[in-house]
Image (cartoon, rainbow over all chains, first blue to last red; front, side, top):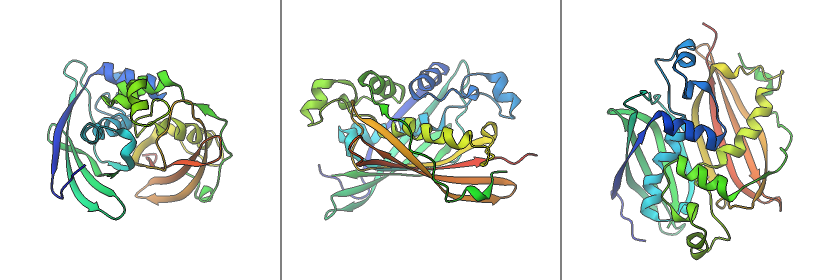
Length: 134
Length: 147
C-alpha cells in the first residue's frame, strides 16, 4: 500500500443515537447508566447522557480501518479523552473523523496516522494516534 | 482519593475469556466497523486469519475484567462512580481472533494526585492460552475528588 506523509484519508462521519449507546453497552459490557439515563447523568453533575469514550475511540479508528481494508493492521492505537460527547435523545450526535498520515518508517514497515475527531466542531479526542503495519 | 500505596501492585491473572465469533460481530457493529474481517468468515480467512478478527479496541472487554479486580479491592479505595476515562492505548502483538482464550494481568503503573483528583494508570497484559502476549492495554482513569 502506498502512503505519503501529509496524505489525508477519506473523512468519515458517525452518527450516534441513544440506540448506538445501548448497542455499545451491550457489546462491550459497559452498563454505566450515564450512557443511557438522563436522570442518572444529571445526578452526577453531567449535562446529559454521554457516549462511552470507548465508543468514540472504537468508531474513530474505523476511518483508518476502512482505508487499510484490514483491522489487523492496526498495531498501536491511543487516544486521550478531552471532551465528552453529549448524545441528545432526539438529535443524537455526529462524530467527524479526519485522518492524516504523519510518519512513515519504511524499515520497520510502520506508518503513523493521526486522527482529528470532532463533535459540533469541538475536539473530543486528543493525541489520537494510530500505528499501522504497511 | 485512590490509595497511592497500590502503585506497583499486580492483580491476579483473570480466568480465561473465550472470544466468540458472534461477540466479535456484535462489537464490530457497535463500533461502526465495515471491515469484512470482523464480520464475514470467508473474508477473514481470505485475509489469512483462522477466524473473524476483533476490531482494534475489543481488548477493552478483557481489560475490564482486570479493572473489576481493582474496583472491588478495598485497599485501592477507587470510587467507580467518580471515574472519568482519561486516556487509553492498545498495543497489539497480533489481532484478537475468535476462538482465543484470553487471560489478563493488571499492574498499577502509577497513582498521582492532581488538583484534588486522583489519576491512576494501569497496564494490562493480555495473553492467549499458549501464554503468548497478544496485547498490552494502557489506561488512565481520573477519579474526581469529593467536592
